[in-house]
Length: 92
Image 1 (tube, helix red, strand yellow):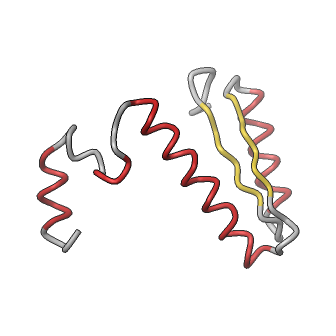
Image 2 (cartoon, rainbow, N blue to C red; image 1 turned 180 degrees about the vertical axis):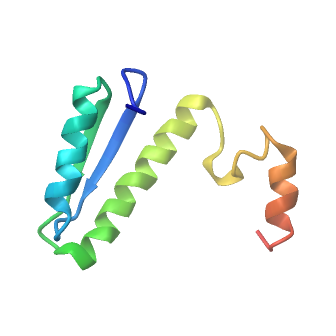
C-alpha cells in the first residue's frame, strides 16, 4: 500500500454517490496503518458541501504552515526561489 504509519489521509465527505466508495478507501488505508481524519458535511448536499469542506482544508493548510514556521501565502517561495519566478510569470 502506498500509505503507511507515517502518513495521514484527510477524507472529505460531502455525501453523494461516491461517499460509500470514499469510506471504503479510507477504511483500507487505516488497515495499512495510516491515520485517517474524516470531515463530513452532508447537510448541505453534495453540490454545496464543497464550500464548507474547502474551509476545513484551508484551516489544515494554515495550521501546518504555522507549525512549520512558514507563511502559507508565500507558496513556499522561501524554500524554492524558482517557484516565485514561475508564479510571478503568470501574474501571482
